Amino acid sequence: MLIVLSPAKTLAMETPPATIKSSLPDFIPHSAQLIDVLKAYSPAQVASLMRISDPLAALNVARYTSWSREFSPQNAKQAVLAFNGDVYAGLEAAKLNPSQLDYTQSHVRILSGLYGMLRPLDLMQPYRLEMGTRLATVRGKNLYAFWGDIVTTALDELLRSRKSSALINLASEEYFKVVKPDLLSVPVITPVFEDWKNGKYKIISFYAKRARGLMTRYAALHGLTRPEQLQAFAVEGYKFDADGSSRHNWLFRRRLA
Image: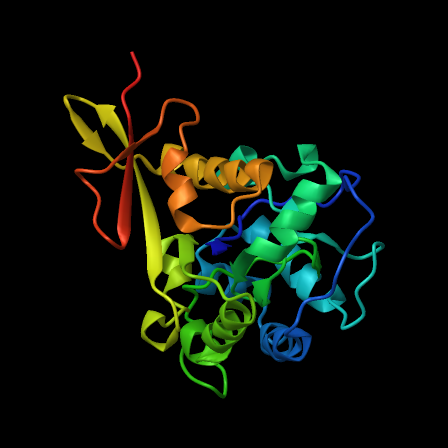
């Protein structure tokens, strides 16, 4: 099986990486095309395009200006160690041992607005470019048009080469929209995480994001290779709900005291 995750908005580029092992992104030429487009934007235009603050826009304009086709430990960091959001707090990649990190490198992919798709140990230069951004390029009006079938084709080639039986979607809706399930040779399984609140079960964004990271960590710790093994996931109170699940949507619920 193969797991896909979303990236995070916040980054931890300054902390020392937990490993010296690294790889390079597959789609650097495509990323460079996007950077060329972004370099033409002023800080005010970036702030408007991405709906971010002026200081954050200025920071990212500086990032686009300094971005290079040459990746090294001096200007980049492994993606799974660089991202610092809720998913990655659950994943705790820095605490995985070398063999567990190797598992993620083989079984996990991170979708990205700028890089298309990253292996966990791919070196990544800092950026802000969410997949839903309406950045117009020669390929269309947004990033979904820019990436087209590129990400889907790469995923399917990987799934076929590994003889995988399913793609596990632990990405957000915004990011998974870049994938075209109908073009994949395997089914997509989407775990859904619900918490009990105010008398009913519901998806709570912060907890759901963390749970995606926890499930990915669980897979790495146990070296899981088959989708059905994920149904045993019972971390931080979550439990598989067979009755509430369907073939392609697996429900995990938690009711804390």
